[in-house]
Length: 228
Length: 228
Image (tube, rainbow over all chains, first blue to last red; front, side, top):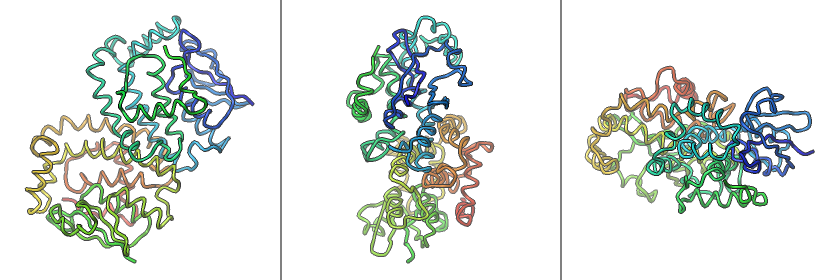
């Protein structure tokens, strides 16, 4: 049965850029599960009210509704064990740290580099909501949040050093093969990749080389994604 | 057979404070393996020359010599599979990220809070070596490196947010039970715990509560450790 996924979309419905939705897209592709994605905008809270909350990703798998990318990964692993996203409870517990790091350091760092670019690609009807919510969260305007990014990007890149240390020792964050850890990092990097032309990674960064390989997986899922 | 471990010691031979050696101590204890630790000082390079390098931990298990805490964990897991430190290749691959994060963010952050305190507890014969090597690495004196720590500690504590996010969801970094991920974080925190009285964690930090529980494990291995 095809899984239905509510997926954040931009002004162009084909532009999909949410870092959390991309984690789920990669997870579904890893499992080889058929999915139909429905474009969803920030202000369409009513469309996903059935999930009991107001954010995407939300998936509907038959009668089961799951929201939150981490909860979806756990659901998929429990319901469709192979190919494994984790493969063991310990691997899953360790991946939770990677998820927490990605949410705070990676996602938080990227936000300050592309916040105004996002505004340009989202649907017009979302813009006042987005500006108000994000300016409240960051305590500054979208323009201020992104200002000076050329000077700040090096500090951001330095914060990714743990990723490089891992890639010196193994080809994927999952080890010899990709796991949900790869979906977490690549999903988060699809966000700036799709909605900005600002290079959050240097061209010669080993993380960039891994991200290239990751976009080739699953029939080029990340490779073929629309960029703004 | 008892495993021999070369373990960094202070002026008091009973003071053991290396963050890497503590990871190995916890790993050995987790496996339930008998160990005899030999005090070692920074300048006793000749004592561990048989290992082909100049840093501890070094273990000797019969005819096998292994150095580097990560390599030791891999060796122990391969040689004595249960109780598991990882339990699967994916869990091990994910733990490598936690190890890399601990080396760069956790250990690097702590160093700037206690570098001068360490100098006070190491053996007198190590002091000029330690001062020279660390001042070259940090590009400043030991005193400068530690200066202003009361003002800087909040930034360090903020950088530990991924740990707190994980502990909101599970009791151990290994999930329902400790894994090598717990040894990595606790081992690193034993370093300031043993050689400084400066509180790197706030008393009400959930990481501190987990660290308390961790020190009670393995017959109170961390609880009974000598503090300077």
